Amino acid sequence: MTDLLTLNQAELLELLRQPYLKDYLVDSSTPGGTARGKPKTNFRLRTLLNPDRAAGEVRRWSTRVLKPSEVAEYQAMIQRGKRIKSLEKLT
Image (tube, rainbow, N blue to C red; front, side, top):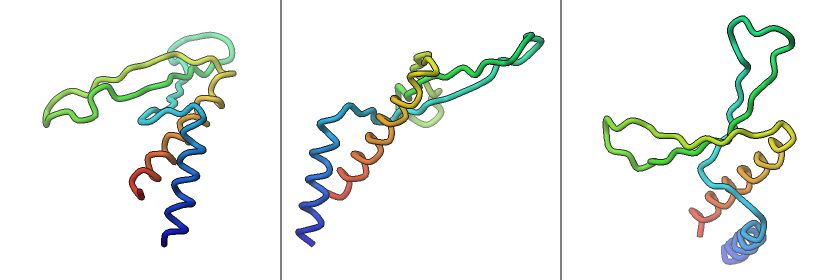
C-alpha cells in the first residue's frame, strides 16, 4: 500500500511541475442562422465561477475564446488538472 501511495505522490509531483487547469472545460459550437459559406467551429475555454453556489443561485461562467491551434494544448492542461484532482483525493 505504501508503494502505491509513493507512486501516486511521485506522479502528483511530476504533474504539478507542468501547467494544468482545474475545473475547466473546452466548449465548441458552430454558428447558426443564415451564415453563408462553410461554418467555422468556435471554441471557448470555460470555468464555473461559483462552484459552491447555494440552491437556486444562477450558474456563472467565465469564458475565453480559443484559437483552433490552442485547443489541443488547453485540453491537455485540463486532463492534467483532472488527474491531479483525482490523485489529491487519494492522498
